[in-house]
Length: 243
Length: 311
Image 1 (cartoon, helix red, strand yellow):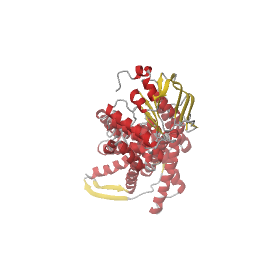
Image 2 (cartoon, chains in turn orange, red; image 1 turned 45 degrees about the vertical axis):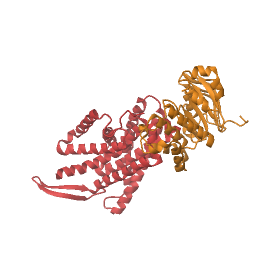
Image 3 (cartoon, one colour; image 1 turned 45 degrees about the horizontal axis):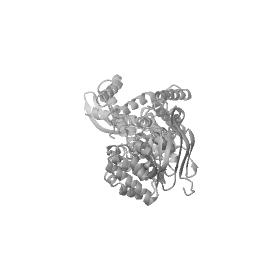
């Protein structure tokens, strides 16, 4: 794209869980300012790819470079200091910390500089969190936890946001709200987003480009609209209508 | 009534010492889910370092009170520092390489480390008890009453005041550290979800090391107090005190900081009252019986968190 090197480049990555292979040579590029999505069925290896980018587990083979730096073997906490943030599978809110403390944890890599500004910004994006400020994370509803997980990731002022299934188990209204926020962040601030989803319709409509993953391998790639129009995609991932 | 008051004072003193040790057990359990059996022996090492430091500085009860307090603070810092190094080393050498292996492995290593520390001190310092001349003497008589057995005076000694006040100060500071600072937040984050903490840029290994360091430093404070209060130590004190403090942590709810403090106080009080009103021989039986009864009705301890979290 425009001859510029990608922000995140994944080349031939293989990841193993013990003797089980989860990723079989994955190639993905994410350019600055893009929303890129990876769709695939449950167990295809999408979340494994997300975690491998963050160095937990480490890639068995292949390389991952971010801003031209090889991060394949870097420790997780160092990778997260390079302006990458992840809202992980299952949200992983700290249940016995308040909403505010969860957000403070998100800002830990910034040494709490400009914390108040960033807090105001995520409260604008997700006003419900402001009302829940003093509440423990474990008492929030699923939708609120998802918003908190994204807000927590944003607190570190990332250049690259990794989002793992933000729509899982949420009501369509909430999914729309969350996807609107992602689009807005991308359009107004140029935030680069790598989104993993089972909800292919929403994800492909939101994304500039997409990849389809089956059994740890990339089987298709193209723009969001192209993939949406492909019969194989429709048959495999959009069955049951556009919800 | 007077007798009760006296036992209460004694119980609070003993409970303070147990509480300070219990914090180390509960924090380590909270963050990596293992019982650090060597923690009681870190307490013992702390007491020995304090004794060595006191001997080296060479002050006695007749030294002026201002100088004694200054010297004791120096001893406290030395003892905390050395114990912290021991705590850090034990974790680094014996526990970290086993992280991620099966659950019993670190537990067995911990027992090994406990025995190793005991034997090391036994060889280095000898097996005999080490006495210390009383340094802090005197105290206050709160009330005096005539009983059929003669005059009964309720005594609050200076050393008891020192122990209780120091414990209250340290526990307050420590609670603030955990509740308010970013270091405390990282510690709690690692305790609740280590993987997520790492995803937020927290250096998990370093946080675990710090937990051991802080726990060991608090145990060293307890070690110095034990030395000043009882005036004798040997290489085996860590075992008994360690088991009691561990019991305190379980009673209060393992993993819970206020629980460890409360559990420590309760175990101290139960032991003292039982010895005061019944028989000294069965004080440990009493403490453990109450632990068993509490755990039957409250399996996660008095202030422990329930196992299930709403998601």
